[in-house]
Image (cartoon, rainbow, N blue to C red; front, side, top):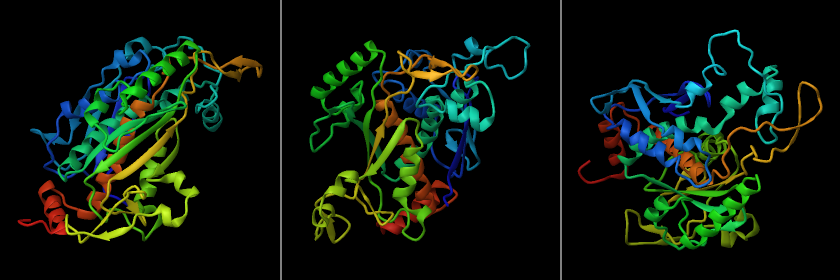
Length: 385
């Protein structure tokens, strides 16, 4: 498959998170500040836990960048956990002889129960540490690198909150992205935002949580990324898998998605009409396909939505079973978010950016950014390329 790949490592309360990126071209301007800016965007949504105020994530570039530009070798990043000092004994790498009380009350909706069975351990701590959405900070850092690459080709990625619980945002045809960035819920509708904030406050008071839906919009994507030839080369499949891999995401749709299943074919597809404007002799009036047809980008904005389930760790813990005794018990509770939809959108941006950077490199190749840009311009037949 593609050229760009990455790995993350680290636990929620360990020393930190690590990411390694392989396949990025040389010559890409990149700074720690650019990556940390997007890490900060992940932490500002209303409904997050107090940990967001503690961490203030900063990405340290360890390798792969020299004098402000990538050098073609693997890029490694470190995001240190500021809570590590409080968890040094519990998360100690070396044995220290002190008794650590195991956690044996798995939380419904988490990886706890399946994890302890799979790995044959009697403590859910090792499972919840890695399964935690804290890992998404590393993904956002990787996504920032991918986004920096996509910017060189005029590709722009946004996200916004479509719904919180049962509350749907009433959206204008044109979304004010500056307003979205100012909004604590990343909501384009200031009228709906107040009701959403109130709903989150009620859920918190009740010891409960809320989910919702976020939408990603990508502009500037050229025609022909991805392929119809094999199942694992289809762009929509690759995006869906990437977004679905985000913790708490339980559904992904592209374009009209599930709503199209209730329509007729004459109402579901984007009619092609002649045009004298733009680079092609045709255009489309609608974008129900969400920018992807036959597994390939079709030149229109890529639209992706994801359904985020309510956070599984509740202030009033769900019923569970103590794995030691087999008796009824309350699920383990640790500091928890009330609603993560706005920040999940930022993680969604990162995952879509990674996929698009991968297929761009797959399509246009190159070991240095200049070479990739030359190939890209030749493909578009841009004058002076």
